[in-house]
Length: 177
Image (cartoon, rainbow, N blue to C red; front, side, top):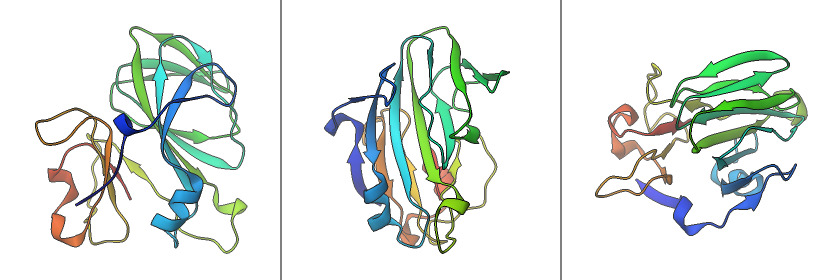
């Protein structure tokens, strides 16, 4: 396992719409170097401290994973999202954070949609800690994002997994594959 970056080492920036702030862990350009055979992707950690509209990101497929329960409206449909459960939606959707019991963070994976990249390439997927999966670290590019601090890993540290790391589901956190 190789450390790529850590939330603690990055400075937050305003959301595109100015309604909040986020800390980018992997930019679209960084992703091209990390996964040249995959569609471009971006990974960030948003701070959620009040209700707000999300920035529109046309051409991107989004996965949103909050660290506390929240409620989102996606094109007018209400989605109560339990803690550490991913919600997937297209970036051109009208999304509003409508309920927030406590300030928290949200992991955001944004992947270029297949129709916006030529030639077609595989898209990275976020697998939440409670989702079933059979991904091995040696089955293409795989990354682990820690969700909580531990004695040997800080919260929101991104690791690149290698074949020698064993089954990714034993490592905890969110898997990106």
